[in-house]
Image (cartoon, rainbow, N blue to C red; front, side, top):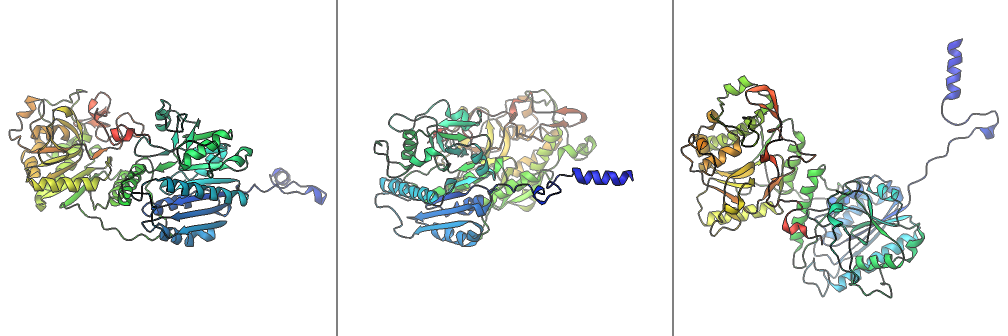
Length: 594
């Protein structure tokens, strides 16, 4: 009986529709609100290279598609942007509430432009009218919001739209990142409407300060709340009667916001996505495509790989080995995330790669190491921490050693080696191809060419005559990437380094006679390796020691002959970032916020 009473009681207490004696007392809870009606305004020109990935990011937004209207305009294209957009719209139109398609096939350029990336007054005027047409269409369909997007922007955060709506701002933009200091906002503006550099910009751009900030300008991707009273007066075209600032669509809209009393906001609370650095007026669509590929590669460092829309056909790619006999990628099997990113990164650059399983030093015990013939160079200690070799360093050395051995066994004349935690300079493949062509032209005698390293004394390195961007390598740390010849691999093997092992980035400078320790040199009499380096470098670390995302299997390990002694990077300056410019925000070209 008590069990029956408990069951009845649980039924009465069970959450759900209210129960009562009279029918009107039996009510059901209210259904949730529908998502707000939102228009996405896509303005695309000469974007065929970025569209498959841009459109994929639109599809992946975590927002009900039946509450989204698409307003898509394209014109003055020198490429097949119109065809790509048409194909995509045919594939997805049934998923969205409404689609407005505004293509214009001719003309293929503006009369006053010097190329497809040149912004002229005619182009600005046309874009201002297009943005105004989209805004008018959103108002006429009683949309709650309109999100303007440029077609080379990538929203990698699927919740971006909801996050912006939650800010409850009239005009708000997600901060988009680029491979430089450039982003989609300004922190300062002169009285004449021009950009003004301020100390507030970089802390926001680097996300050292996080929040939602009042700024004088947002552009490229931004949301308007059409429910707000203040938005009624906003316009892109015609410009306000008092407007005397530069003839530019985003500046004209910023002026409209200012005179209407509407504040623009920029949010960087999360990572929202990426935008391409604008091409220069004289550059081509191919130049812009190269910039976009590099943007994808940078984005994959902080997030998963990007994939194109399944509704757009992409012709098959044909990766190659860049005129070399082999392209090696060293990767630990227990690091599949790094392998997947690097394989995808190389594929996006049309580079065919062979993955070489790294020797996992952490899985070796001291007896295993002895069986491999490994012994420490007498008297070796880390120059900073004072420790001896780590098992991670042994594994790293053996991984490179196995590649040299394969080259000799297979008689491969040239190969390039990549470690799996690297990022690339823009147009990496094109730069390397040109470099190797010039080296062959002058018949340079070389054994190894660093593509990525840490320079210890960069000012002491001499340029190579008649070869651009090549120097004689000085004492260096790291083996991020290098090109190696059969002659070079043979010299390295002939030195019999396993029986007198030091870290690989100490061994190489010993072999080209640039190591400062004279005692170590005595163990390697044939120090005639011909070593050079690209300048500027073409490959950089993804992360540096001390960064939250930094992981090192060579430093975070144990001593090579004592499993009980743990090691990490602290105390060794070798792993710290060097003073030379990197591929990130520190490079001179990257400091341009515009």
